[in-house]
Image (tube, rainbow, N blue to C red):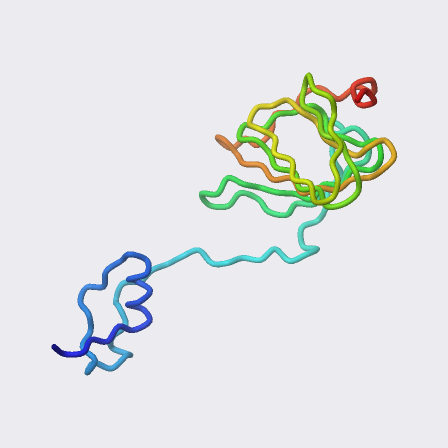
Length: 175
């Protein structure tokens, strides 16, 4: 049996589960052994720190000063997006839901998260909060301490959130 030469391109095709037309004999120079099939793939992209400008949270969705720094948006077939959100003391979201749920990763400060009909829960740096799909909730800083978290949510039919009424001072202050 003659030895067979599998070039890098052939190995890539095999790794991807694509079979090259024929193995190439070792006597054929590598430059001629490259597969004729062209495979195009998405390229890695990097959003450099500081290139996505922060925005102020709108009064229609937040109470108090909030800064939202986009981290990543849905791309291609992906459905997830994320942002770094900073709440000043006393600041919070309005009540809202997410069609596929939401994950919060607390990075600094201290905050509260509350599901409708439940008491609010205190959250700290390193805590990961999983909010199920379509659960009415709010989150934000405590009354005395700012809080920052990474918010990750997925889109369903292009929609990531349904904003509802604001959290009243009585609701916010009540444990």
